[in-house]
Image: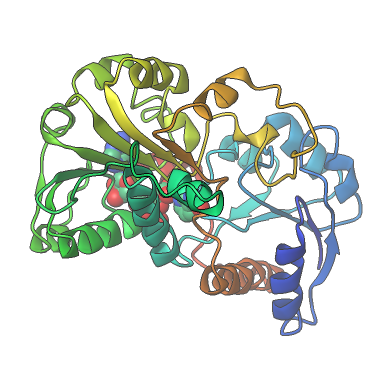
Amino acid sequence: MRIAVFSTRPYDRRFLDAEAANHPELELTFLEARLDATTASLADGHDAVCAFVNDDLSAPVLDALAGSGVRLVTMRCAGFNNVDLEAARRNHITVTRVPAYSPYAVAEHTVALMLAVERRLHRAYNRVREGNFALEGLLGFDLRNKRVGIIGTGKIGQIVARIMRGFGCSLRAYDPFPNDEVRDYGVRYVDLDTMFAECDVITLHCPLTPETHHLIDEAALNKMKPGVMIVNTSRGALIDTRAAIEALKDGRIGNLALDVYEEEGDLFFEDLSDKVIQDDVFSRLLTFPNVFITAHQAFFTEEALTNIAQTTLGNASVFARDERSGNELTPEEIRGA
Ligand code: NAD
């Protein structure tokens, strides 16, 4: 089976190549290009495409891939908001993903972001390097006894709950499918309005769906405690960034920590340090002293990349044998999820 691997970076190649040694039946073509309508033809002659979070798997791209003979899209990530599953089905393309590779990687990064933004570690690091040892502007707060609201208590949200319990936080959660095990960590499920009114920290761990698009918008921000900390390591479009900027300007948001951004596709995973950033909304975010941004790196640990490579190629191998891995995505499964 020939697989065209899109959006390849050196680390993708390193981990996928290592795992491919266990799969002589798979032949990988590494492509740096991001998958979209203009690059889909690079998959000509391949049976499968391996894609990542910012690749475009909308209907026109899937139509083109099917025309090239592609029968499988093996996503090397958990999220699949960038895949039109109805179009995949129409084109008889199977889509698989890596449902869990290391929820610890993402949960631990979430907590790293919380601490970094509220203790102003980004500013402190630069100051000390420049011989500025003043503390003015670095005042943080204890996380102990703060109320932390977790939106989405799946694999990642549950681990965040366990870690934050260790910090001595009081935990609230919202999830349409509450989980009894999470209650055992001392988490109280509440509705979103209650969470917004009560919590000092709100962290997002739900998938991006039409229902959760701009879940954090102007109206939601107006219901939150003044000075709230918001953390998003899930998907950028859960937050209306323009509304967040207005709330940062007047202090309704006290701290914002992001690993994802709604228009990240044109920015993240590239070295643009020699270029002029064209995205004025993103550039505005960078001007706030109380905003801390990483470029979609929460998943980026040795353990996670090893597991991603194993499951991604394992999914392809199972497909090549005409079997099911259980990691296939269908429109029905998602609507029921
Ligand atoms: P999961 O499927 O285990 O959990 C998601 C939870 O969200 C489920 O419990 C589900 O019931 C809940 N949910 C669904 N709709 C909701 C809604 N409207 N409001 C609140 N909760 C809702 O997923 P996970 O592995 O915990 O991952 C969560 C998200 O993290 C993924 O969707 C993905 O977008 C993101 N992610 C980001 C990175 C990164 O590197 N930044 C890496 C992996 C995953």
